[in-house]
Image (tube, rainbow, N blue to C red; front, side, top):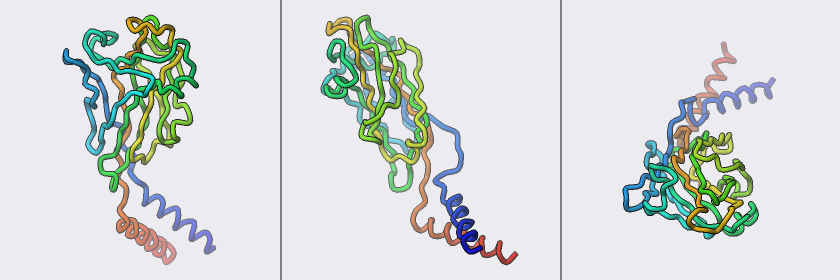
Length: 227
């Protein structure tokens, strides 16, 4: 009987300590890489309240080209990636750093976290550019693939991220490219555009609030027993 009461108290406390109630996903951060004629802006185009759209960078195996003469695979701009080994494999892409990365974070890490539900993006390759991509994250030190597919040719790709990306303080996503057909700079690039992270900003209870919630759970159980 006592064990049952403890289980009931625990279940009630957990339900009351939930980080957030169900809410509709929003765009947490979006990168449109708009080209103003002098180069491509690599900063976040849109960020939700409570989100920091942080660093964008390329690995050692790639160069980002941002001038308007080269960034033509999307009419609005996009970030162009040039580099990599012809015929490269996933292993080579990892070793040589053939990736483009974006980091997003909760702005107020003491009181809030991010639940990141999906990652959307567009990608297109030139005639001899890398034909395949895979995406990894810092949550497992870039050890496993979130997706591994062919470059979609301008169609939107969506990656469902799952519960591992709930209650995140900060995370880096890396877009790796491989299987490049040629090293000719004029026709062997890949352009990424409209990278979008969707989810919610969730509040976490302060320690004092947590104690009040647990106390309330105990009181509620006591009243139930007396009823």
